[in-house]
Amino acid sequence: MRDVDGWRPSGALPDPQHHIDRSKAVGALLGGEDEWIDPLPEYSLKDFSPPVRDQSATNACCGFEGVTSPYVTARYRGIDIPELSPLALYTMARLLERQDEGISDTGTFPALIYKAQRDYGLLPEESWPFERRGINQRIPFGLLNRCGDIAVTGVWRIFSDGDERIAEMQRAIMRGYALGITLSLDRSLNDYSGGVLGEPKGETRGNHRVSVIGYRPGNFLIQNSWGKHWGEGGFAWVSHARIVHPTTLDITAVTVVET
Image (cartoon, rainbow, N blue to C red; front, side, top):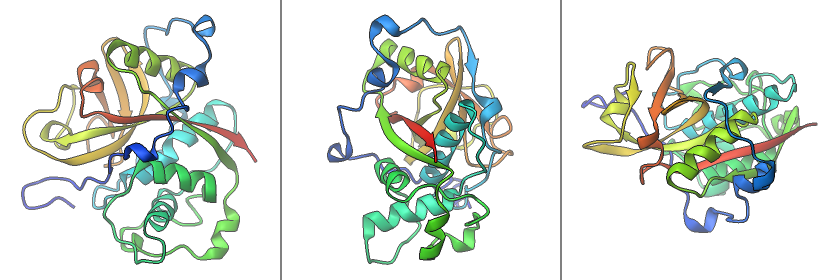
C-alpha cells in the first residue's frame, strides 16, 4: 500500500557494525586469487529464481530477499526444494529482535534474517503462506519442526568498493550465489518501469532489500518483491554507479546444504 504521496513501504534497516562479522568475506568463500577466474561478460540465475511475489503493502522486503537468495543458491546446486516462506522468516527475525514484546510490521535488519535462517531454519511457503493480514501473527511452535529441506550454513559479505565490488559480485553470481543487497528507496526505484536504475537522486524514504541474480556489461539484474506490475515483470537492471554508491549497503551471499 502506497502512502498519500505514492511511496511504497521500506523495510530494510542497515546492519549496525556489531552485527557484521568481518571475517566472513565473499572473497574467502570464492577462494584465493589463484582460484578466481574472470567473470563471463553476462550471466543470469533467473532460471533458478522463485516466482515474483508482492509484499509492497508491508515492510517485509528482508524476509523476501532472505528466502530468495538461499532458494536460488540451492536450486543452482541441484537441490530440489519447495518455495520458502518469507513471512515465517520475517516473523522469526522480528522475534529475535524484540524477544517477548509484540511484533509489528516495521522492517528488520538483514543480520537478524540470517540469524533466523541459521537458528530456526526455513519453512516451506505452504506451511506459513504470505498474507498481509497475518503479517504480525506469531508462528505456532509446532511449525518450526517443519523447517529443514535446506540449511543455511554461512553468511558472507562483500566489503569492497568500486570496481573490486563489481568484480566480486560478478564472480559470486557466476558461481551460483544469488546476492542480497540494500538499496536506498528513492523515486527512481519506487516508480521504476523499465530501463536502467542509475544513482539515487532527490528524496529518499529509507531502504529496500532485493536479490541480485544476474549481470550484463554495466548493469546488474535484481529481483524485487513488489509484484510483476513493478519494473520489467518484477525485475530491474541496476547500473554499476548505483551498485557502488555509498547508499548501497549489506551485500551478502549465503551457503546452503541439503538436510
